[in-house]
Figure 1 (cartoon, rainbow, N blue to C red):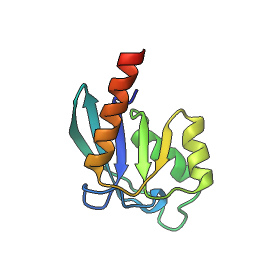
Figure 2: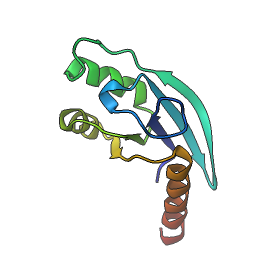
Figure 3: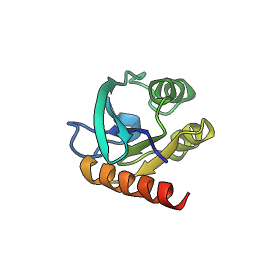
Length: 114
């Protein structure tokens, strides 16, 4: 069950950013049948070296209170790093509202079946 999720997005409407290049993550809280934007978090990485443990650690610190991150694309090493830290990672190209609707539906199924 997801209660807080992050989206790599340029304008906050679609999941359209590669994880390693995303400057902004939109954080949503999911409560029952509704989702609300909590905040926008800017990611400032070492611009010269996107794929390294230092940047992975910075990204994790930025997103560690989330249950999952949704991104248009993510490299295997970045995904492995986040997954080892218990952050679920999903590659998807979709509108954020569609993803949130799907999460709410799945959360409700879990409540009913659990």
